[in-house]
Length: 357
Ligand code: F6P
Image (cartoon, helix red, strand yellow):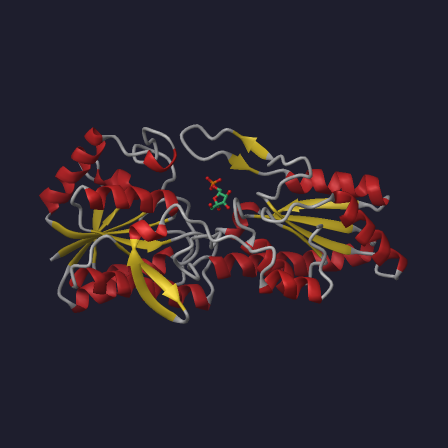
C-alpha cells in the first residue's frame, strides 16, 4: 500500500506533527508514504513529491511550517463557479488523477482548511480515496472542537500582550493589538483573556468605538492609565466595513488594518496616546506548542487508521478529548463562530473585559 499526503492552504504550527504521525503509523503497517509538494500542485504532471520514510521525519515534530510546502493559490484554488458549487476544473483533476494512478496511491491524506477540504470532497465524489485532516489556525471549523496550530497562535498572542503590557504601563498608553481571525474571533478571545487584555473586539460582536472609549476613560478615572485592546483582523468597523489590505489575485481577499483605524479613533475619542501593533504571520510561524504537536500527531495517526479501514471521504475530528472522524461533507462550509451569548464571552465579561457592545 502507498499512501499520499499533502498540505494545502495557509501553513500553521503542527503540520509537520501530522506528517510525523502519518509516516509513523503507516510504516508500522508496512506502507510507503509519498509526500506531495506545495499542496495539490505536487500532483500535476510530472509530479513533485518525495518518499517519506521514518528516518526522513526525525526532528520535524518541533518544526513550524511544513517540510512539504503548501499554497493557498494555484490550479486547485482557482475554482470555477461560485460559492458552494465552485469546483476545480475537470482537466486539472484528470491530470492530477493520472499522477495518483501512476504512483499507485491507495489513499490520499489532505491536510487543509475549509477550501482545501471542499476540494478534497469534490475529488472523493469523483472516486478518489480521500481522507481529510482539518487545519485552520483560526479554529473555525464546525466539525472539530480544536485544530492544531490554534494553541500556538494563542501563545504568540499572549506573549505579544505580555510585552505590550509593560510598555503600555510605562507610557500610560492604549495599545491595540491586531490578531488573525477572518470570520471567527477565537484567537482574539482566547489570546485576549489569557494575555490580560481589557478590551477584545471580535468579528461576531458588533462594537461601538464610543463605548470602548468610555470604558477606557472610566479606567483612567479609576487610576488604570493603560489599556490593552485586542482586535481580530475580521472585526467589522461600526459602519459594518471589514478592513482589507489588497485584493489577493488568485487567493482570498487579504484582511488587515482594522487595528490602526481603531487606535486612531480611540486616540481621538479619549485623548490618550494610542499605538497599534499587528501580529500578522508571527502567529503562523515558529515551533508548535506541546498541545499542537500532540494533536497533529494524533490526527496523522487517525488518518492512517481511517485509510486502513477504507473509510474514505471522512475527516479526522477532535471532540471531547477524543480523536475520531466525521464525513467531510458534514465538515465543510460550516464555520464555528464565537457565540455572543456563549459561556466564554460571558466569562470574559464577568472578569470585566469590554467587548465593545
Ligand atoms: O485563514 C487563516 C489565515 O491565517 C487568516 O487568519 C488570515 O487572514 C489569512 O490566513 C492570511 O493568509 P495569507 O498567509 O495568504 O496572507
